[in-house]
Length: 129
Image (cartoon, rainbow, N blue to C red):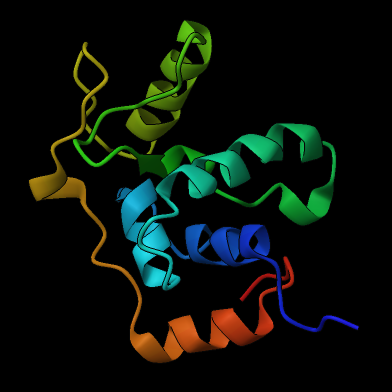
């Protein structure tokens, strides 16, 4: 039996910890989880939340707080979703430009301490911290 938490659950555990009014990037989250080349997999994990939108265990994941490494909202071919993400971020006090860009010098979340990451790596199962 595999008792290791899966990568998606680890991603969700990190994203749950991004504070309101801050953002992180797909790559930074991948790096925090010890998978520096897995930025795209972080995106896949967040995209998979659309299949879980009716599951209360995943309703608290602030997916909108994750952007690309340039601070841009990078939902491709879904302008309405990109605008929705921008609206959610603006409601949290994050300034989003008309070109859907966030100033990372102001809004970038520094991340977690290694002890917190170690806990996530061992225990992430979708539960709240």
